[in-house]
Structures are given as structure tokens and as C-alpha cells.
Length: 199
Image 1 (cartoon, rainbow, N blue to C red):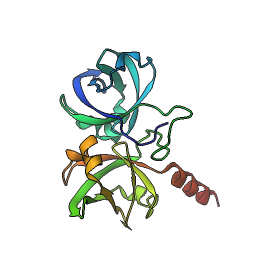
Image 2: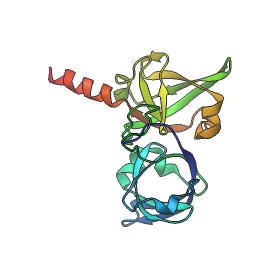
Image 3: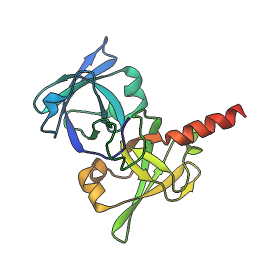
């Protein structure tokens, strides 16, 4: 489990096809000083995707991404040099500064527009139609692993405000209209919708 509070940005160093070329091994450069201490098998959220560390070094870790992950997230577009938001898993007793994030990406959204608004920026996103019903005004959503509060919602589009600090310490500073992003809906919304189906 994660909180959606990014603790560093990584960068793809190497991509190696595995599994008859359908899966991918990624070596990711890490900003953490204790990367070598990450246990093998530990989870790391990479742009919001929960991935398993299979090897670690002093300033890097390696993960495997299946064909399913590559096709259902933005990871299939990554190349050497691609930057991504990173977060280590939540420990019992840690401060929960964002919201409960599982690292299970629900779909890929698109940046529609970025408009300056006072000291921040108003960002508009579009999500796949099946996800639209899970996003509510003043609810939570994780975009590329960043916990955010939704402002307005209109069908399959929604807006959030991004402050300069968030742009500086995450990959939001790299994004432009037309770019694709990983979307994870709020876990509570997922279960409420499922209960409604059973009713």
C-alpha cells in the first residue's frame, strides 16, 4: 500500500525484453541513498504502478513488467531516460499524507489542458468512460502515483489544481497536453460501486 506522496523521481536506465519478448525488465536509477537496502521482493510504486524489486544496487533497482502491465499502463511507452514518480510502500505508523493507494492502475488517462490559476495550475484530464463513474468532486484520485483531490467533474473529464511544489518534485513538471498518465481510482469508490451492483 502507498499514500500517493511521491518521495523521489527515478529514471529508466535499461530496458530488456524478457519472456519471449512480451515482458520487460527495467533498471531504474533511484534518488534514494539507501536503495541497496531495499529487500528483494519489496514493492515500489513507479508512476503509480506497484512493481516488485528483483535486484538492487547502490543507486538503482530492477523490476519486471508483464505484458499485461505494459499494455494497460504507460510503462509500455517508456524508453531509456524516461522519468517517473517513485514511492516506497507505507509502513504501519507512517504518516498518511495522501490517501490509500494500492498501486493497481485502473486505466490510462490523457492530459487535456493546463491553465494558470492564481499561484497554481488547473489541469484537466480525460479518463476512459468505464472509470468516469468512480471520480467525484472533492474525491481522491492517483495520477502517475500522485495523490490528488478532484475539483470539478464533467462526464469523463475532471480537473485538479497542481501547486508549484508538486510540479517541481514530480513528473507533472514534464507533462504537456496530449500526454498519457496512469490513473488509479479511489479504493473506497471502487467498493461502493461494487456494493451498489449487488443491490
